[in-house]
Image 1 (cartoon, helix red, strand yellow):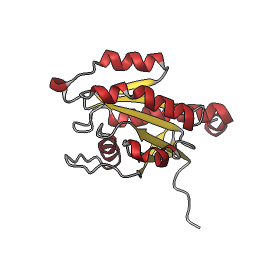
Image 2 (cartoon, rainbow, N blue to C red):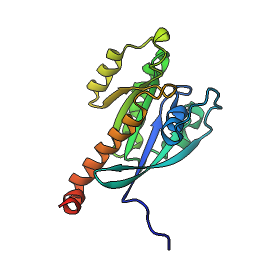
Image 3 (cartoon, one colour):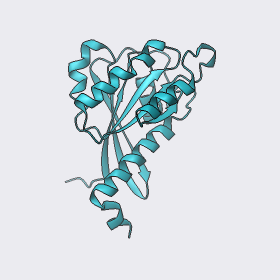
Image 4 (tube, helix red, strand yellow):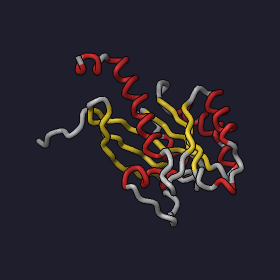
Length: 186
């Protein structure tokens, strides 16, 4: 039997409208790559990346969901068991921002009650085409008591930081829930 190469496994989910950059965020984080051409995700895809936090190896299993409504029944089944969800909108696309309420409703309906959430305003490198101010994004996040960050997969702004902060929040919750960290760090 192969030796386990990690201490904890966290299942993360990227959700949001089609075209907001979920797949680009995933590839930037997992492979440090950015591709200008992407075919829309069909159904769901995932990547794995192991990071180190507080001296522990954390395997992140990151699921990239299709944003199109026709895949809704497939993708919502992946909400169950997710420990963290990144809700992504495009700062140059008003509709993707307006749909945050819909995505939050899906989280409430399909995810675990204690799931960690983060809203990402993606494509912050496209300042000249910005339609959604940072303040509007922050206000929605504050209203829902959710973490917020602006990102750019293209220029690699806050991508690693977003995943690290979400993983840290999950790790802190795991530590509190079971006392695991206290027992292993003492």
